[in-house]
Amino acid sequence: MKHKTRKIQKRLQAPCSMFHEEGQLLIESGVAISILVIGLLGIFGLLSRSLSLNNVVSSQYIASNLAAEGIEVVKNLIDANIIQRSPWNQGFSTGSYELSYDSLALDSNQSRFILFGSANNTYNYQTGQPTPYKRVIEITNIGSDEIKVNSIVTWQIRGGSYSVNLEDRFFNWRP
Image (cartoon, rainbow, N blue to C red):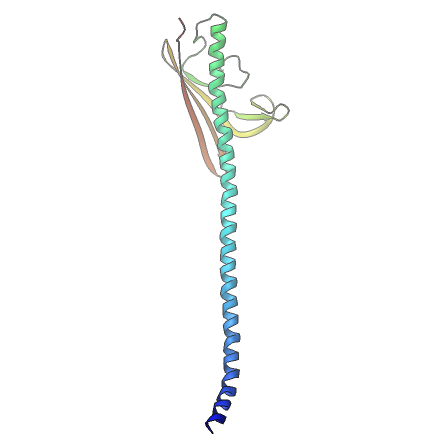
């Protein structure tokens, strides 16, 4: 008799446990899909942030090179004075200026945007497509034998304002 009751109990339990497993599978599937969606949203968020930071880093790279170019143009003007046997600091007075890569003298600051000439891949103030960059060269005469030069490039991108400021000092070391 005990043997028959065990079989009946097993038959009665089987449909219940089967129903319980189906519900458990549904819950496990829902949890797995939720974890997968949260993981994918995190990856997409990181990817989006990475792309926007890439744009900022790219613009900082360009601005740093534009600022360095401003310092180099001032150096070229000083070297031109030396070659022409003029005073080394001729034409340099304290103030703010604009300089292009091919400048032969200091131009007063007009706060213009730098243009990109795609024909020859140069930045200038005459021809080309507008860029978000403005460059100001600030010259300070410290004495008769020293000039301080700050090349400041400013720009706005994606609602943020940025700037790069490079400083160099030039000395009259030639006799």
